[in-house]
Length: 220
Image (cartoon, rainbow, N blue to C red; front, side):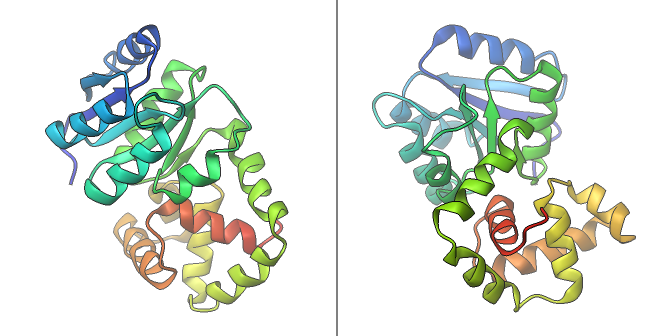
């Protein structure tokens, strides 16, 4: 369970970028940047030290790049949600980042309010992909290997009809609260369905669930 104040570590090799992100996030009373890192190894050390709710991590980092750091954090400090930062809407490292356990993919030029909302969403357990990259990222996954669709459909056969409905909405980017309203159930019930799907489909997080759903269908 996250605390009433969301703790964040910001990792980027550009000092001005870190300062800008800190400045935006700390306009929100419920978010506190507890540390900043300029390298991947420093980010990993600070995550172990502070155990933040969210790590905002640049994809391209010196001394232990962001991708390797994301994998290490997801493996050793799973309570910290990792969101990757980038300036690119198309990035050849996105797939590895998401498979490494990242639950967010944010653009550095996104609107301040959108950044705050994204951090809140990620801290609450939801996934967040910047709208500009969601479809291009997930479409790229399917186009690289057409066999993904058959494999994904086989995996989804393990889900109930209601779980598939929840998954479809999750893949469209809806939060737990929005899924609950759409399905006329409690938010707690949605969380329970998502937890069961994570186990059934052997996924680490919501983004990986969404990737399977998008692979399996053409209408996400």
